[in-house]
Image (tube, rainbow, N blue to C red; front, side, top):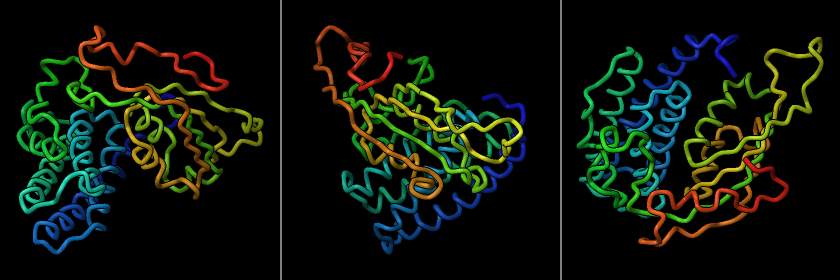
Length: 277
């Protein structure tokens, strides 16, 4: 899908307007948490704010913004699920994290680049909340293609079969399937099959209608909840979404001889009825 036919400047303007509102909402939420008057609902609300900012940033390829937002939302997910404990210090880190996130949003909006180490200290503190190494930041220099999770913490991968069938109204509600597909691709290795059976003749086609559906095969170490969050604004409303776990592959043991290529040991995990990628 190319950029022809899309007024991207309009979408960008809308995205940054939404970012300003989301950042303001997140700031209020983090302030409540810092003052000790917040609750679990505030953690969920803050997660949704950061998650939404990250999703739009991925669509426009704002890589620096996506990278920071990913670490931010991961720490929030750990807090809201109880895997990490909220303290006054953690709340203060969240406040500073929101400020840095705002810097990345404004840089993306202005088309400028921030210094390579901008926000690095805060990112390390956010990563530390979920027990990640305190300094994953040298990704740009040490690793040509930064990965979401540090290599030191191997996780079991699961093969998921995901079906997304939008209704005719999805685009009219401001939800773009392309954003969801890009965000899904950021979670692991994604294979996509497009269903064109609902495409009408050209004379009957409504430019604002949604006719395509997709079946995805995703190999990821992320839990089901993270995948569900990709579709949380459309599932059951403007789209039918099904998510099924097909198989699970244990994390490779340290010293098995594969090194960083261990996840590629079995690229063709059994997928019922699926074609090889």
